[in-house]
Length: 283
Image (cartoon, rainbow, N blue to C red; front, side):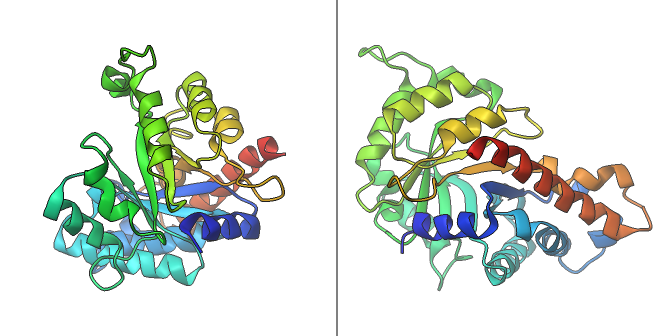
């Protein structure tokens, strides 16, 4: 089974396309986990316990784990998520050439890396920079296309000689790279018109749609254009991500609050609300 086959099974099992971003900023961890041996792992474990019934996927961002204790926390996090039957997409935005690319790809290897199920990659060095990822049919590869950040348009909106914006060309090229059916695109929800345009270019490619939640992206557009149907009788596949809006939903409880269960319960409730909100548009 490809990553997207497994993801479809998970979406069907929990009736959800919610991706929960696991970005455990050390400065925002509640007091109840701050003194643990691996605070980021302790935090993620509680978040997973609170949200897994509503999560189609977890998306840890590698930036929050790039130190010795962080990699330990990431390994534990991925293993724990897998124990809950939830796939893990590592948001690493890798992209390089030659031996460097092959080393980066080991992050998906069960024997060498944290063994995530999918990864985000940067396409701007061309196909050879992504070949080690694309050649592994069991792992998902989400190619950055039109990102949700305010400065994304500085390059992604540039008009080519053909008249198309660069992000549309990236989508078309990534579709040609999809020989193993393991390619998706990262397309933000903060520009719904562009989300629709990319869907027109690649009707069958699943999207990871960030920007719903703290960035205020368009949830309806995220569902309408972010999900792809491989066949008419199958569940459409795609992911709509929220990170801070879910994992730090309990901050109003305060870092020193006594009832720590309320902090993590708030994360579960936030994931459930997002799931319900997205499902209103899934039909």
